[in-house]
Image 1: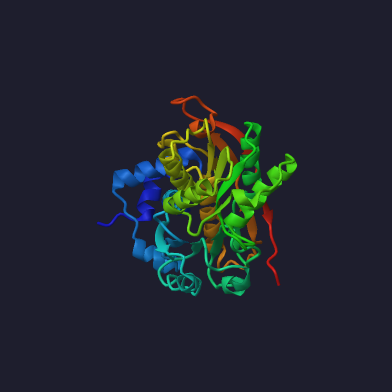
Image 2 (image 1 turned 90 degrees about the vertical axis):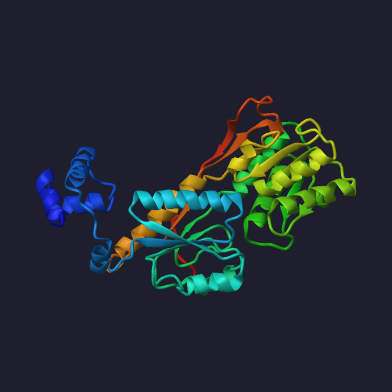
Length: 362
């Protein structure tokens, strides 16, 4: 005979509601109660009828994560963390790669996947402030990143300006004065490049170091190749430099390749700083100092926010929109001389984030 939730409840000596909460992985359950129910589930061989549960709740138990490019380590690692956070709450994640296509991003917001998922976590790259009306959607939505602010949705972003300022200040504190940037997007007003450049310029101004446009290396897509090319362009220009701040780690790895090819010692001749703290920078030679933007906090906050929206649907309770900015830190490694060769890594600075309720633009 099929084992039911009532059978599990009787075996564990708890209510059916408690069994339901354990099965659906609600967090606010006493550990000893959860353990008792899980033992009963295992002993009886109970299996959740997913189809029946979804029909009853009118939910699929799935959410969509839409990101620009999974070949970039940052988004691949973020997706892994979102999947883990969702799994802990009993949800499955469907991954949508938009490939930095405006039309595909528009399609995501028009709900192409909402027939099979309950909510969307979305990192836009091509859409911006002029497209804010597209974000007024009839399903739970959490926006990631820095392209769109004040949308009618929850928002998880980075501490970009302050983190970039702190990264540049760290290079200054190490005695570097000719600090080049790799990855600038000329004319950009919002977005990661613009915000990180703002932090870079603030740190220079605070230290009384004049901004030199000759030290700014432009790049389109933030890949290893564009980082290597931008670094090559800076060196070919003959500009004097003693440090490089790459606006993401992929470009930092590309810049490091060019510096090696030109027989420049890192960090002796040129100190190198990246941004994102992806796993690859722990295994480069030398290992690369990077800004850790709080990726795990970004993933967990995004999942919690979208699930709150899903669970609040139909309740009649108005939940205010929230903006979450995670803590960021600088992880010092060999490329800036923060640790000796083969010496591991150490956190050399932390920039606190925060959370606030936000009112969308009207």
